[in-house]
Image (cartoon, rainbow, N blue to C red):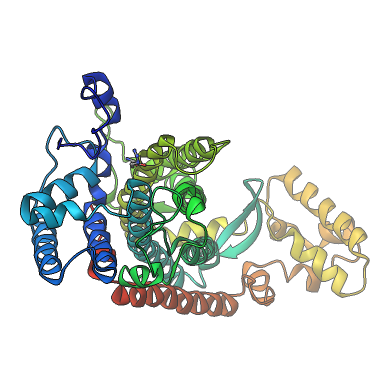
Length: 480
Ligand code: ARG
């Protein structure tokens, strides 16, 4: 026997070049815990059909649980000659359980094995990710609730548009994150399918009840088509999409923080522990976390693209190309694991300049719509009201003053409809108070939105925690 999982029909061992190209332990070692767990499930399958005797099962089960402990302690490691994680686990099993260990490969291929490991790993990683997403949403909610009634300028086209509350502005990001959490929950159902028992492609002759092995791994169902089971990586592509879109959301948050913390906006200040300096300009305080969150979204999109291209036009069951799914997947998971806590801390410690935000809220004639709305309310067709308010803006702009600085005579001259009563609505307070549409910017509505969002975040968090509590230990960790 060789130290490889194959060799009988070969006259020589692999060339060093092939071995180097083929070796994947540096990438797939993080699947070791899942590989041990599914080996335990497979031992149960073989015992059921009499391929393993009860004493052998005891021997193997002990060996596998020792291996898990050593793996967690960091003492079980791949050797340089090991081709992949599956080779290490089988080699170790044979070293510890002898012939019994050598029997375990029956009815199982690395093709169903790697697909099973990867699904289990993705599920555990997604649970961790969901927790981090909930932390981010909570930091946003905390800041938003404190600022539920703080007036701020609202933008369209990055031009001052209408006043909003800062809580409303911050709260919008929570909804994007909530959709990401929903997508993750939706994806989970399709990912939680066990390929174990599919064998190389045709199905194992020994797996009488793949559903039972699936249940042992915490997966509610087993594969429906064994060829699909070994070749399907939709769950990887889908998870990468959910992560890429989440990354896009983080980039938009990052962009806003960057703008807010510029001297030009000056809406917020970064905490010292969550910002960086310059090597040459002593005065600098840079929003690196926000920038990295923005920049790293590029990798997440790239990783999704890599996997989609990898899958394109792959023929029939398993192809070795599929090994290339792991580097982009793991890179995306690692990127979010690093980015999310940093961005969460950066947001949690942002100090908003309430005075400046309040002063900026009515600037740029952002109350012009109030005047048009008020005229419309009194029966003036909106198209005409818009025109009149526009002329008011032109007059204010010509004089370099705000709308409210125009005298009653000046207003009257623009249009007799611009009475002092109409002009009186042009305040930030009125503008905010009148936006009582559910989901709108009126402070009371904002408070309601935020409290509803908080409940939703808590329920998403609890759902993932429940799932993890119900999962077998091997499915709970990050498997790193
Ligand atoms: N390392 C492979 C992967 O990640 C698993 C082994 C595939 N099977 C094989 N016969 N080489 O997909």
